[in-house]
Image (tube, rainbow, N blue to C red; front, top):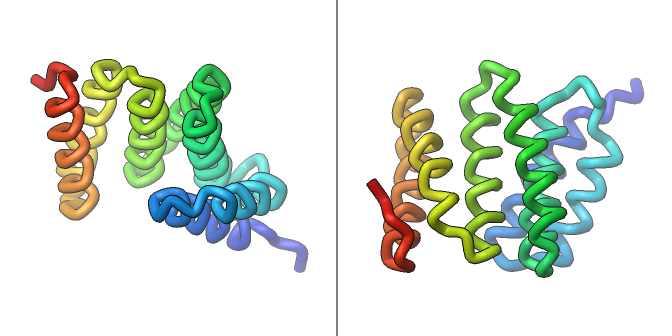
Length: 144
């Protein structure tokens, strides 16, 4: 019937999973699929491709472009009531900031994500976010 939204969202999740595994070239392929398939009205897919592309850009050293895309993703996500979309976008932005050597700026963003995860009792994601806070603290970022 021509609906590509499920393709887009699945490709976006796969891009994120591949990024976390360090399979960056493959992640890029699925970011492209997500971006080209995502309907403008499906915010979750729009957020997913922006976040994954932002992290890949930052990893490649294009921190400014990565941050712009990550912040666009957060802005879109915060317009929704979907906590999973919001927190994922916040964590993508935190990863971009961490990658660019700005871990201290990532701390309040990750703290916000932890609060949102815990409010929805998403304990595995909250644990990953708390682990990132510990990593940031070890790297010298002030964590309150």
